[in-house]
Amino acid sequence: MSGNWMWAAKCDGEGARLVDAVGSLCRGLREIGCAIDGGKDSLSMAVTAHGELVKSPGTLVLSAYAPCTNVTKVVNPALTASAESRLLWIKCGGEKNKMRLGGSSLAQVYSQIGDDCPDIEDFSEISKVFSIVQGLLLQDQIVGTINKPMILAGHDISDGGLITAILEMAFAGNVSIGIDIKNPYEEMSSLDLLFAEECGIILEVSCPDDVIKRFRDSNVQCQMIGFASDSYGSNAHVKIHVDGKLEVDEKLVDLREEWELIGDKLGQFQTNTNSLKEAKKVRENCQKITYKCDFDWFYETSFIYHQQYFSTAPRVAIIREEGSNGDREMASAFTLAGFQVFDVTMTDILSGHSLVGYRGAAFVGGFSYADVLGSAKGWAAGVLFNERVSKEFENFRSRSDTFSFGVCNGCQLMAHLGWIGDHDDEEEVRKPTVFLDENECGRFESSFGPVKIERSRSLMLSGMENSILGLWSSHGEGRFTYSSSLNLKNLKSNGQICVRFCDDQGKIGSDYGSQRLPYPWNPNGSVEDVAAICSRNGRHLAMMPHSDRSFLTWQWAESNDVPWNTRFDQQNVALSPWIRMFRNAYNWCKE
Ligand SMILES: NC(=O)CC[C@H](N)C(=O)O
Image 1 (cartoon, protein in one colour):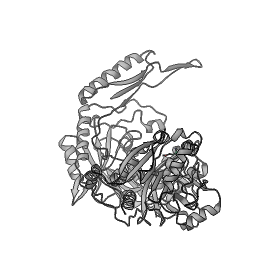
Image 2 (cartoon, protein in one colour):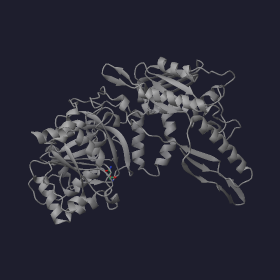
Image 3 (spheres, protein in one colour):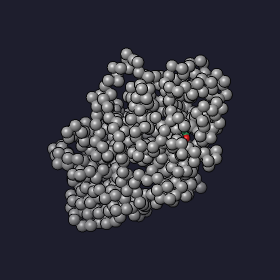
Image 4 (cartoon, helix red, strand yellow):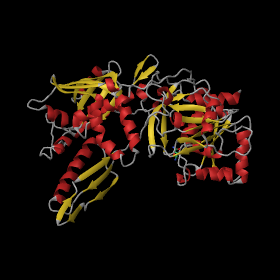
């Protein structure tokens, strides 16, 4: 663990308090079997201003870290509302019959501090809860050939107490909840129970009886407190009872808007006001996202490892520049699809490495040259202002047996190079006609959302049309613009618009008679919600959102809730439908 102390240690009485805190920390660490191996301390956290001594509150921040043997075992707070799941409240570490309000958010709202604040009296209970949760994470329920996690969602109880944790889970899942908490303590009000920030967790689990038994067998207090149900968004309702008495009875969206107020206020400093308005509307009306996959994508990857070693497999160059960061995921997607994958830097190419032996080139995402002069401009200059390199690229582009794929920063590069515009494929001088401008919302956008795959000429997307799938977006400059309005028209009629952002219903802006969808369904403001464009011959594809970061099911933001049953192949790989793009490229090379 790493420990970070902030304290006004030199002020009267503060040194003694610090000693107490250190003593209690040492006792705790000993009991749970951990140690602090680094950190930092700021022990002069006091200042005199206008004759008044201002002290920082004595604070310790502990960050724990450990080796992670399986990165797919992630618990996220969004309630899934799957049938038969239940919500459990697990209280741990604090004295059994106490729910203390001192120092809580509720107290602050009433301008109070309080004198009795939450504490950990029994550190061994923290270890017990930790071990039980780890056990649950390891043990998926196998239903047929499908793995179903025991823990579907989870959240710790901290700022705001039990009620805030439950509500945040409902907001994130966008679902209804029905809660009835039995007050286990006599003489305790609903306010204490709901707002005390005592240590604990809320879990949404798929086999509640089994899980409750595990906690209770270890003498840990665990109570089933209710369920989430699948009425979403504007239809969702929050009902919270304590001992059968109704305490909260509100529409989910009303409570969530209240909760979003501060976020919106902060947002005004960094986001275009119109986008914030759009986002509010989207939040109020958002339903469950309907993903749809009409094609087959699953295959055993086991043959690939064998094949790549004795390889006649097609070769793909994963091309990166100083500041790129997406090369590993791109390499991994092409590897899983069966390619021989090569790490090729621009320095390699500048010093004579040729692209002649490759069937494919992938331009990866990132921040080439820190994007100081506009995203990918520096990268493009490295190609265009070097006669030999620019010829090398042009030869690769125009060979009839090659394909390329650029994602995000790589997409921006392809636009600068003129690989995806409305050109005739034979044209030698390729002036850029497509540009990627700053996002309309005015900020870097990092989010997971649905896109619709269009019928297009792209060889990588062939057979995938009309599906609605989720993708990560992660860019500051993703708004497709064109040198003339004719350009977009031509791109459309030529079948070069390949992917569009869509909404929860799988609809795009024009389905509502509008030029584009509201933010954040359309995260960057591209006219007609364009997210990817290919060359006229369909061999070169440039895409802003990242299929290279979404080709495994667990990479999806709501991976517990995908519309298909996650299948693991013999190598324990859980492919998502996006792998089909990379497989399409492989099959095309093999034709
Ligand atoms: N993920 C990326 O490739 C980001 C691209 C570029 N740096 C942008 O912000 O638009």
